[in-house]
Length: 163
Ligand SMILES: [Fe+2]
Image (cartoon, rainbow, N blue to C red; front, side):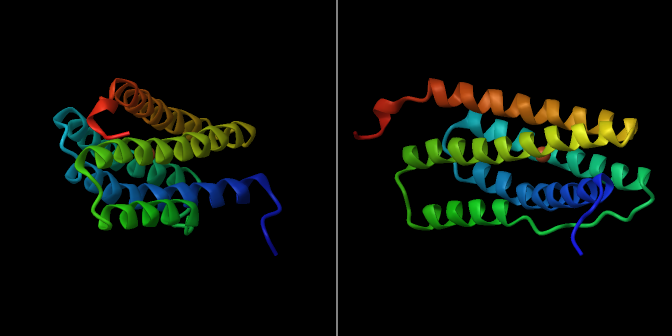
């Protein structure tokens, strides 16, 4: 039988984002390695370090429920990153790849932001205030990273790529 309670939904979604965060450690390492723009490389590396904190906070939340941390395979992130790898393997132009890194990283941030916003609402309904606080800290970092990516996207030199 599938989930029938808020608690079960919460644990499912927590496991999903826990899985996604682990995949994103490697993904952000790839984004950093695949870019020519030093500022972007710094941004990707900074966020990669933050992901370590995100994972740590998720472990703490599982702890508040007396549960061992458990990954729930997240095919959404898997497929998004598989598509990214395929695009990179085809050998795109360096400037195209810079822009594609920003786009793909932005997609992962949107995914996580929605996941964390939903988890916060469910944690509130479950009166798990410790979880709400921890999830909000991560959500702020996810949002800040998305804002910075969007600034890069807006400031990107589109003339550097043939139309
Ligand atoms: Fe994250």
